[in-house]
Image (tube, rainbow, N blue to C red; front, side, top):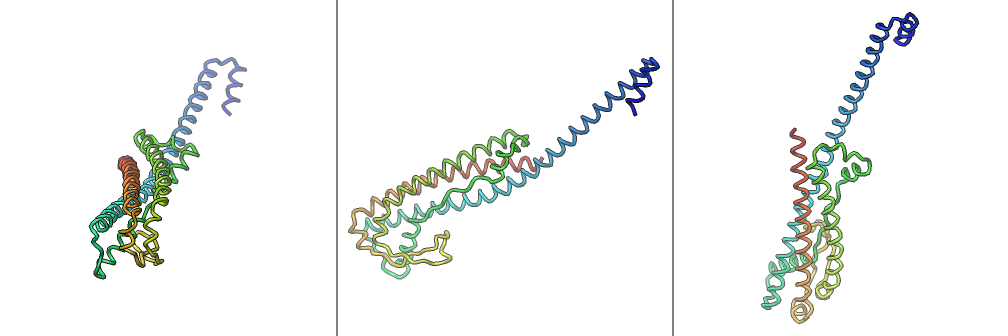
Length: 243
């Protein structure tokens, strides 16, 4: 309709009316673009909030996993130390309670925890380009740094696990395992019996325990660093959700 009016005004050489019609067209186009941009920006903000909530759920689970893992490694290191001291001092467990505690300590020597996973939502955002929807530079940086740290922790765990397997045969030779559901840390096994005199007489055992101390301490350090990165992500997420 506006184009027909412009054509009529041109035909009548009513240039003032043509100018007014032109201004109306320009304003209409401008308003249409602005409305479209506002709608797109509003959709982006809504999408950003959804992504932030999903990432927050990911990292709540990740932080919980890593906190538990650090505790597992703490307990394992304490168990290794107690066994090493018992063997060095020839302090053989005698009572049923002591035998049970020593068996549990042996089990904890061999317990490990695979590092926490990468955020599925972050990986999705990376592949889809939605990472650019996050306006917080601090949040984006924290997410990237966590993802890098999780890769380092995973590679470190694999290498350390290989070392552990090479040396722990010395301990396995003096232990008999049995499967059981509901064992702490979800290992699914317990120590059915052990040969304490044989462990004391085997020159390989104390060096194997020393190597296992190195393995567990390094795994704990890697997953503590991963936990710190996850906590930084959660801190940035909570700040965003509070705004």
